[in-house]
Image (cartoon, rainbow, N blue to C red; front, side, top):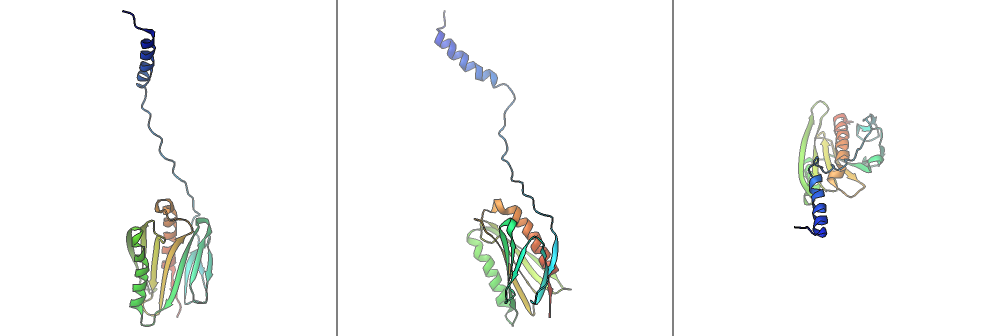
Length: 189
């Protein structure tokens, strides 16, 4: 019985891939991870005519207006921390509610909101840091007060479309700076 040449060629082309498939398994290459490097944190105290002072990163540009509102720009991260100062005038409850309302306005885009309380009785600094996970406009918000005279709210904003997974390393970096700001906060009387 003679095998026609067409069938023979077909069988050879069919067998070659099968025979080559017995080699080592090939695995898909993992996706490349973006390597982001941020400068080691170094801080200096910002002192103004405002009723408070705090440490800020030396890689930032700080602008303070006549209401003692502060804008801290991180040009290398395309981000800023905006802080609003309000005196406490028998309105502490309203200030807390307003600060929390600003945070929880992000629930539409947020996957979750978690808070970390902060208290330093010696310095009379009390507050919370809120981390907003998901593609919200402001991934970190915070407020601090001495509970009698001063109240500050703050929020982080990026100059890019919010994509939580992409900006997560920058969020971590800024969160450490915010913790340092809160821990170093001093009120002036």
